Image (cartoon, rainbow, N blue to C red; front, side, top):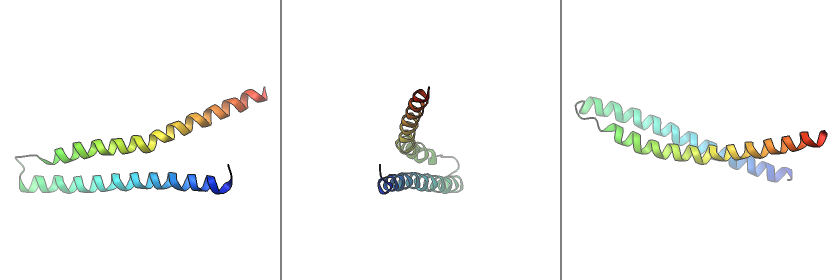
Length: 89
């Protein structure tokens, strides 16, 4: 693989990670705000957790999408490493 192709792949990976971290940051900020609003306006009726749970499921899917690829790359790297080690014997 040439240098330009490796750069494009690395840049795409950074964009994936950046997107996930932005999504997670917004999730945390919005949910903190919703908890405060809920507790100030209607402390006897807790409704904020519906947003937290269902949006949280989306965050988990996003994390699996982003970091699941990382697991595959680790496998490929480890296979290559073991093959090279075997060649040296």
